[in-house]
Length: 509
Image (cartoon, rainbow, N blue to C red; front, side):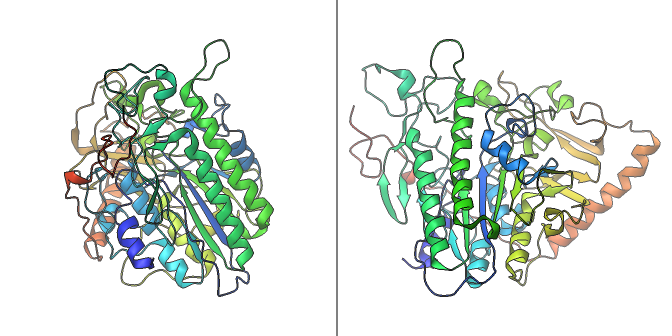
């Protein structure tokens, strides 16, 4: 299947919610030389506080914690948006949603996806001789959207049980088992459906097997490679073993987190065996935890957004509070990235695109501007600073336009719009617009509890600097070549659990 055809179907449709995949098993041609390999692992809905290396209360990430000890941990690292589609589009393009057109999540029935005139990281590296792996590059393995978009009965809300496929009028004999076992989604390998409904309890191991197979075959081919692994973890519905009764049993979230950690450990072990000195592994998340899922959501750590929490709603995923976009991040490259180093540089998922291209010796695409930085000097321990400013867009609901509502400027964070997503208790914080922005000093107030006094000297000094930074960014975007995504929908493509329809293949009740 030609690359363009795969891109039209798999990249075009890959941002329906969250894309979970892998790629190319045709290895021939050019030699690698000294070009590095890249493995990028993106977790879904993982909180900053879910990583044990970040937050002492977490004991579920032994492999990731070991990676942190053997590499570099970033504590001020941010997703480019606080929901799936715009965050992942930004990773693949190095551009904010206002530039690449993906400003909020696509629906399960969306016709479009990432605009085809945008240039992905994979496309640039392919031109530099790389084999590229992701669901949606040369080869595809995975589901085409979030795994809560199947025919579950209110999938993952908010407590078990929720059987994935209707069993008619007969009650399930084992709701605990059925709750997060099968979902009526197609599992693709290239353009072929290899399983539907998808068995979630086996999906992590299938991803691990495909990832390790890709790394081994690419390493043996003599060509450099890029592998992008977009994990289903920690999005609901949670997979992993069913919870067991009795003392010492793991709650579902912890069980899922440990399964994800084992998957990442398998990929890292394969990298080590295949030649770790020439492979850069980057792990991070796409946004913060989905608080409305209650005990099925992760931890924001100290980034509790208290100003908003006191007024209702969640200050996590779907918001521009720190809990919505500050994510765990690790870099691992023995001999290049220093060992057991914690970096407080202000960095972003947007930086992956330009940094990887710089390390590969590949040029940035012409005719467009980028929001990320080449942060290789930070990775190698030669610099301590990253961005001076980051811009956080709205992205939490259909119809949101990716407007830059919040500005991070050095230690300060300014909100022109505040609001809370739906919380576990059902509350939603009302949207409030601030003509004079709320400004928090994050060095003194990680919890975003108390903004600077509006009449104080510090506030008066920061406001014009924030306004100038935002105006500069908006002017740059206005002068750029921007794309427009197609968010129109076709209800006929919705997944189903009707065994009479071939697109579903759900077993009869």
